[in-house]
Length: 431
Image 1: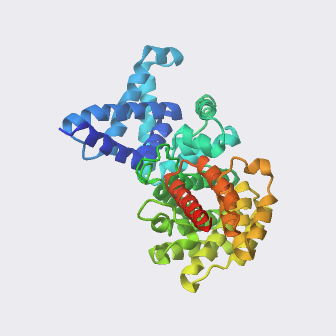
Image 2: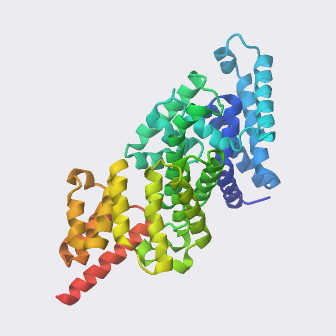
Image 3: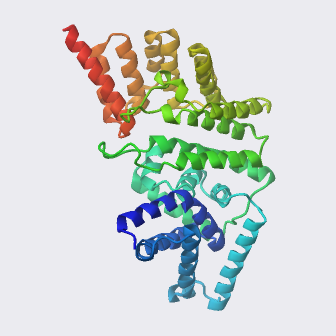
């Protein structure tokens, strides 16, 4: 018999690695994402009791899938469901469910599509679904992010995002949206939403909010970045000549190469220019460069390629010993031309500060609408750094405090606190 904490820990590990895959399989069988999530939640709940009493099974995913399917059979047998499906006998409903399961397993066996999670992501990008909800639906259903985390990314209240997700899943069921892989132009129409979700999942892995600053740095979902890398590599294998898919693959592998250097032993964020390059994964860098090189031959420049090109310049530092900030500014100029975002504008200002001096950086930041910057944490962090570099200590301290007010990310918080304390100590000495 396993203890409850041991069982809970084991179930959490299984959920991290298998949740999206299990939901995708069940959703394909039921044609209903919400039902798939409900029956899988019941299976995880049952696992808490059963695994604590009998120990975890040899095949946890298979166990959960079987229990979830049985729960769905119970749902089919309920009088409520029989009423809702007027005209169908119980035997007909069960035969239909069995046929769906058999079809799913046959497709998996013949590799009709190499991963059910990726298939479900394309279902979530169906044109019958509100385009604004494509990425959010993928992030929750396939990649396991909660509504609160997604709401933060989209800058909307948690309750609003939760309601939108429920309505979207209901739409999939009501519209009988098929769980099939699109092809041709339809595939092309949906791929941008899939790329955005994969990128969002990767970013969420190390930017996940930490509500309690006393929690350990490893709190959160340590496998989400690996999941994103797996999915983008899989997508590249499906569409090897899609430039932005290659661009995103390059961007993710460049970013992943620095994963172990991103924080120090105290769990404090280490800025890229201060990271020890010996801790970078140089095989990942070469992999990223290969993707970026292939993308450059496809004559379709896009956002992810430009972001990857910026990271490529940073990666050259490991060989040259210096960062070409002028080249980085030029690439940000291109990015602002084809995909202007608040994040890109602030990052460009930081790069301008490195390339041309703090006054130029502050001027570049001043060009961004002040109303947009008011609650944007990276802007305050960049402003604080530039002000400190220019000797405006008091204003820099104000900016650091504002940046701290706007972050709950533990590594970022520790970094900002360290910089603020250093600045205050320096100010005290000078007086």
